Image (cartoon, rainbow, N blue to C red; front, side):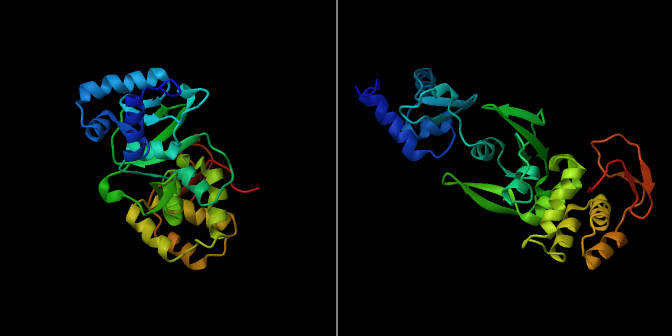
Length: 265
């Protein structure tokens, strides 16, 4: 016995630590330890009660470092949890904007674009709120790999992040925050006025052109060719500048937008 753990159980925990990175399922533990799922289910439940494992969600576990003061409160990195629970997926919206340093605003929720359909678009796992956005395989955006504690997680690349929040402003924290993010993007080294057009066309929502063109104009961003592209590709009918706000405000026919939010100072 050492630190209250028998030699047998310590070997099991060591094997789980060595073989499984990040949260693992009962099936994965069963395969690694070469025992039946029913047997390992009981073992894992025992380890949780003893504080040697922590349950991320039903059927998903993480190992807990020995000596942890409050094992039941031990949490996995939220991005790793997202990759494990919602895959195939990528981190996007305001979470990706923060990753690329387009915003320094702190959000308590993680935005996840996922190909898996869930009944609820809002989920809480280990005290972290996740905002889910479903996308079809054909609509998957461009992503980059980010390494989090030696685990690879997908995050929308800088241009995809901008297109995603223009397509769905609530995922960028509302259009005012989207405006701040867009402005910072155009000041960054990631800016590419030609390539972002390809991203917009791939998404296939011309409302993006309306919002982007309007933001370029009202924020006095110097991007004449991109502005011209947006103007030529404005769809018919009026769209809300910010779909999270009430359908009120003036109609701006140049961009076919109803200006229901104030942008800039």
